[in-house]
Amino acid sequence: MNLASIPSPSTGVIELGPIPLRGYAFCIIIGVFVAVWIGNKRWVARGGKAGTVADIAVWAVPFGLVGGRLYHVITDYQLYFSEGQSWVDAFKIWEGGLGIWGAIALGAVGAWIGCRRRGIPLPAWADALAPGIAVAQAIGRWGNWFNQELYGRPTDLPWALEISEGPNRVAGTYHPTFLYESLWCIGVALLVIWADRRFKLGHGRAFALYVAAYCAGRGWIEYMRVDEAHHVLGLRLNVWTAIIVFALAVAYIVISAKLRPGREEIVEPDKDAVAAGKADEKKDDASDAPEADATDGDPLTKDTPEDGADDSDPLKKKDTAAEAADKS
Image (cartoon, rainbow, N blue to C red):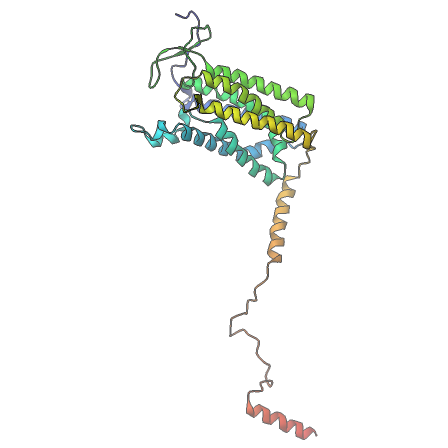
């Protein structure tokens, strides 16, 4: 029997006055705001303009949420599409279930769109935001605490997590893997900030360091979890994903450092100037297009010979000949 342990919330809903808010959703919302706040400070310190990070986040966050949910539903499809389950539950994102790999992948697509619209390089923006993403993950993991999910193997350690009886779970004390990952993500954020200051990371290397460091922790934390998951060659699918993504991130850091050492200078174009430039491009494209003759094909508006110049009229020909004879 444990003399000390971490209690789980009796409910996953936070009451904000008359408004009920899911603890999971609340943690995600707070995480997003903190990530944007940290990213904005770092972006301005690198020479960018205040507000740019938030503008691009408007694209990145929705894409990331969709990507995270898709990854979760695809890799845990049995929770929604097997016998006795309802596929409608796949849309209940507030009940938990976001895959970080899908969130990063599709979130990067949204960020790319936002950066392209603002005329700034995606790698530089990602470097500025990297520590903020790690902190957002640290906050977001507490949503799993509210939902009593994603815990580890049974343990009687003083910091064991109390889990109550419920659907697909047995009452007991377990490793609080959500807490392990939350603390790990804080460490990742501090590592990226330190390394960025020490080595002047640029061209996406700060973001790649965040990815590699996160994967290093996710691998051993994932190994401790006991929730249902697909296995490949004896390892959970997410462990393999962490190994592969870790290797790719490290390779990018090494190769990028050789090809493009140092940190790029951020020269952010004015927002209005970018919009005006795009408008001018559209005008140029329109002016370069061949203009169609509005009168082509209209028999009523085609050019016709002036009066007296119609050679096909024999009477007019006689009049013309008579005038010529009089003059001579």
